Length: 125
Image (cartoon, helix red, strand yellow):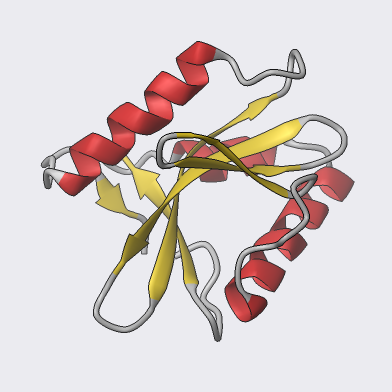
């Protein structure tokens, strides 16, 4: 679990022992990483941000956490028995204003595999 909270929990998908979202966060400059982790904590404690500069619906069931310096964390909403859950699929550095089709496809594919109970994706605990 990336961030437990009062309102919801934030998880990241892991394939085997590799978690792309966590690896991406660790590759960011310290200030950017801290800002995104603070955003995840605020989200977990208080619910999804209303500010579309921070959290934006992309298409279908894909959402994205955004940092002003270009870091993006793609995610989808899920639920468990206890409370709502956000599952982060992967992170990227923004190269343009509009989301790349390949990033949206990856997020949607990962979501579908997760929902279907794909054996090679787990939620990172």
